[in-house]
Length: 154
Ligand SMILES: [Zn+2]
Image 1 (cartoon, rainbow, N blue to C red):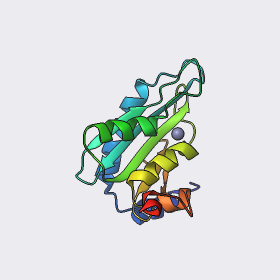
Image 2 (cartoon, helix red, strand yellow; image 1 turned 60 degrees about the vertical axis):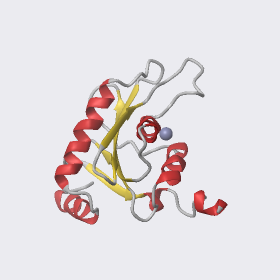
Image 3 (cartoon, rainbow, N blue to C red; image 1 turned 90 degrees about the vertical axis):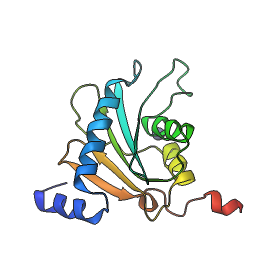
């Protein structure tokens, strides 16, 4: 975001309260510490908010065979689903090369499709954050337009 005024507009357009966002961002940072990224050195933490207000976290978990690497977002989703959760309202993603958060990490295409499985594209918020004040938010429908989802198979 270019200036403070734009950030304020960004914050107001979501329906996630600021204190909840801050809690999620802190949780994402904590999860990022556990990232297993010996190959890419790109460390990501994610914090997923359920409709009931619980937060589930995830980090990226790489693998020597590369293709079975799991992103932080999917780790968070799969942990939450394994705990019995299936309704979500937002996710905060904090990712960058090792060290300080220097960039906004938007979810990869695979993770966007996993979000589509469990979330309403018109209501689910995706935050890419560098700090509590420096972030951007998009609805899932903006990140995955004209998507294919569970309702196509009913
Ligand atoms: Zn991903």
